[in-house]
Length: 135
Image 1 (cartoon, rainbow, N blue to C red):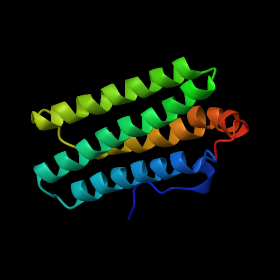
Image 2 (spheres, one colour; image 1 turned 180 degrees about the vertical axis):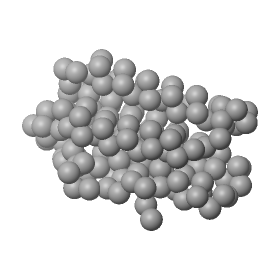
Image 3 (cartoon, rainbow, N blue to C red; image 1 turned 180 degrees about the horizontal axis):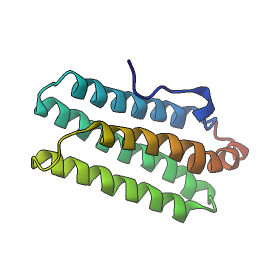
């Protein structure tokens, strides 16, 4: 059973970004499944690395639009992205060093942050970018 399911209410009405958000949900579910089935640490590490890299790519996509269309809340949004990237990289490094066991608490943090970020912060740019013709 999936830990994080995509819902239409999460849509920002921009296909490219919605598809990226769906992929982030899939990575969180993949990490959750791997943890539940006690897959090897190496496999979990690989999945976490994929999530971290994809998150950075996704944030670059959003920020590209912010810069191109002069989104007024760019600085705050980019700050939220950087805090999250730093947190995920911290999890990743601690996991690699054996200092951190992947727990449901961490996976729930990832899921909750993603949902809250989409429903709160991302929804703020939706209408702005839609008005610029981005769909």
